[in-house]
Image 1 (cartoon, rainbow, N blue to C red):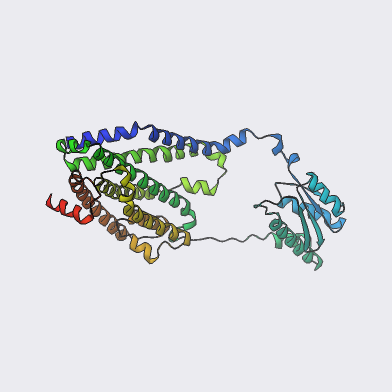
Image 2 (image 1 turned 120 degrees about the vertical axis):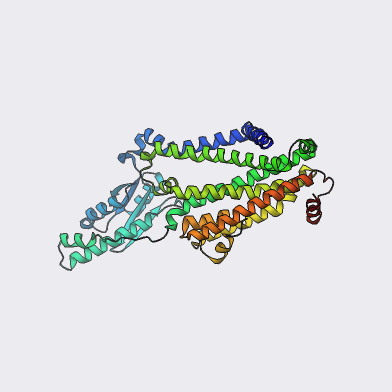
Length: 411
């Protein structure tokens, strides 16, 4: 146990003293700070350009003067980001005003339910036509009802009728949970690949420098393997807590400035039990892949052979990741493939967590998935320690799987 503690402390210290590790963490925290403070900063530096009198101009030409007041009122209520002005100029004059920049666009009504929209440069996000269609449809309905003998009050009651409804949710709201589930899956994806590769590089570096041969004589292989892997796991947790913790803190400091943004709120209003599940699956998922990366890299003699050696493990992880992402995108996270992946230890950290976040899963399914994952992680950890011990003496070309297994069996 003393050997394990020393190795864990040494490896963890090397991560925390790594300038790249610290730099990336600080950069991400600073980036999150900028994002979280953006609404506050934007509110503090508002200029006169954002005042109503300096909003872009949207011209509207009605069919007749009697219709003009109603049209202007309706368009002003719908186009809140514009100053809506009535015009009686001809089409050529309106075009020149748009081309000169005096107006950003214009709607020329050519009938009770028809118009021509004039605009200079149309952006990809121009939704003015869709808004105008809705406005004109409502105006046409109001005029039709007024023409049929209804009073203005009756028309207002019909047009502004409030429909009341409620939803009783018996399971999970996938739309509400999608964003933070996706973020957590991406965080797990990045941490496993990044720190798994770091474990592989550390082991291979020790072997190529012959330092491993010296270390193996003074410490047990199991202590060395578990110390390296748990140190990288702890470093990953420190980084995640620093990033997501600072994000949560800064969001709460600026919550009032986000104006009840549903997307941002959904990211930070994660149920505590889901955070607990994430921690369990993160730890077990990370450990199982870190052990695999460490074991395989111990059999490699040259650093340039690491990527090739660990490719099967990387592809296995990517396959599980793609299944989860495609299932989330389809809206069906309880398909047969996801259910199977929920019990395969190499894919269950992502698959079962996604199902927990976006669907209703029975407690015994979760217990079975976690039990299989725990047993497999312990088994792979023990096997990885034996491969690590046998890999010390393997130099030259990368050995085949059969050779590795025979050496482990004899050891």
